[in-house]
Image 1 (cartoon, rainbow over the protein chains, first blue to last red):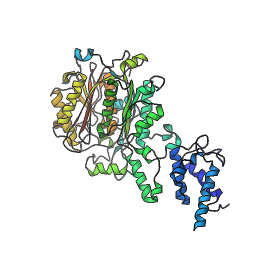
Image 2: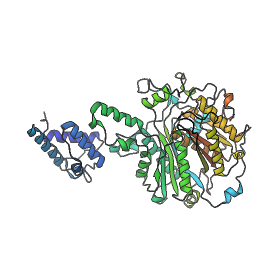
Image 3: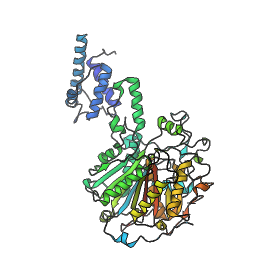
Image 4: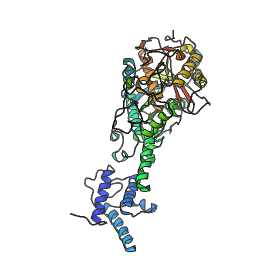
Length: 93
Length: 435
């Protein structure tokens, strides 16, 4: 099965893969799991790294003040935010 | 020859009200084993930790011989997400610190007020990790650089992560005096205890220099022993005629220093007291020691004065003894000037461990502690033919019984001309550790 580039499914798969590469346990992590405390439990530098990885892979960047809020997002919300930026970028081309 | 008997410390020095600084825990990571006893025994048995690098590994073209410490899984000392970009020096520091605290039986918050325990843990820092990120940036651009780089390599991060991992909330710092940094950390710990800043200090150093760039700069500076690829165990030869340079090694050493009264209060036994220290600078050259050992001699004299001892009281010197032509000659000259031609027995640990840079000073202090406790002086391995220019009462060809030995001096000298000497003596705690 192929996944469309920039689709929510691809972004979700990328995020979960990134978390595993960052040595986080993704067992039970789904769209409703928060990235920060009481969820996947990414601390500040891990959230920063996730942002860098997404920027490197998809070319979308979260500003510093936005990055502070990433921990409060769920995996699904984060994927949607990345997809929305991708869509805006595509529309702007 | 030599003075293994020692004499009592002058009464005035010992009766003044003061804080006695006792070693109540020791932890080491070295190429010859993970305990002070293992290092001591390796010296006594002539068991070397030096070997050739993996012929297919990154060091193969850079180092003929090195002292590799055993692998440590970073997950054993850090949360898994923090293990991907963390330097080996930090991992070894965490292992040695955990072992030292366990050896002392100290848990912050249980055995000592978290604000009354300090950590002074030093090292050159994670230069290999920095290099790996430079490579990543070269290959992938700015987004290839990990946000974890600084916590993974800064020279204060061993201290910081030990503080975080063990809930140590008091004074914390690291010392940057190259190969004298470990001994200087112990001296700083002594000062913190004497000044009443803390009741317990975790003091030590960790070094992970075994990566190509650092190996190459040592080699290009012609500081390394050459020509021993077929006999790695023979490469490090302090004070021997055939010595030709140092052998790089990696490792960590951590001591738990404690106010003796605090240790008594919890029923803990001490290994030995740190009686005093001296520190000087050669003010001569960035890497070459003063040829006459002027700074080193002054350093030892300061340490003895700090400890309230006379030169004749000292029954053992654990030399810095790296195996370099100039360094060993300068140190031998300094020891003779301080202790006289009939000075105390001397031996060097680096013959079996290699040069663990700043960590050596702590490992060698731990060896000296055991020499005092056991009444046995470990020999210098490979000292087959002592260089007449390094004439000393060398302990060689087997350990030397010294049942009356009470006081020892451990020397550490670093690039930059930094000299530190520590003076050790019997524990002033009610209970003495059996070793």
